[in-house]
Length: 370
Image 1 (cartoon, rainbow, N blue to C red):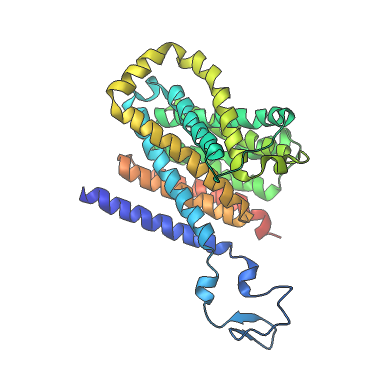
Image 2 (image 1 turned 135 degrees about the vertical axis):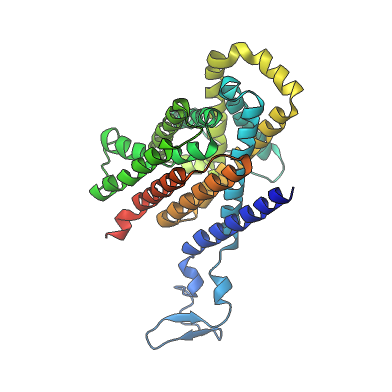
């Protein structure tokens, strides 16, 4: 339809604009033309002012743009957007929260497992990791928390609006702050604690007038935040293991191994919660093409955007990451709400702005007050 085409064009412009902005924030210093090996050499394309500042005479506008990083951001945002759309469509087509959210969450992980294995066996695509049994044991806590964060998020999106779930998930720093201080013994600054006030307040404001509000969605999204925060701390601890980065070989391999272990973790939970409904799910998937089509698509987008996010974060600094996550939330909340016809009352928009603004401030406050 014309409306759908206009929405898609607007989304692509938003994604491209946001990705250009955040990639520009991370322009490497080498783009200034300064190198420890090339300073004595005179370049006709470079002029030096009396203050010693080196300037590019030509190509300066494009030199500051990292094309690979820009593409990472673009496809990360686009993949995240399409994941939320296809995930919600698969959940709705299969009965929502009363259908098969755990089954869908587990099978989405399986799609990622298939891609990871394919990437190792395909010629010249990616070298498999050389991890040990001890490494796998150390990755179990991270993979368990990753699985729980994913499954809780899927259940939250099955129980309520995608936009509301995203607003609650934006409050993850509040969970991270409590865990970091009281569990992992790494206290945060007073300024960061104060930044949590608008984060929590924004979620409350957004919840007051939420037409699709459900306590199950709120609790599930909060559980996803909790496990995501634990995962972040456990991942830092894992990466301190001597030699594990070299044995994994790449960031992509790290995410692939985590995905495989997460899927294996999900099987017992699937058997307990929805094992008795497997035949019903097979029948629904067989008779309702929208379920299987969107499940496969959402699994592919989930794996893809998460791997891209991991690669992007590795190439950026802390402030760029904060801006990137902030922009991503805004795009998902607005874009998905428009496409799925979800309610966007003033209180919800105001609450999301306050919450996401608080998250951005939380992520950057320590650098700002130095």
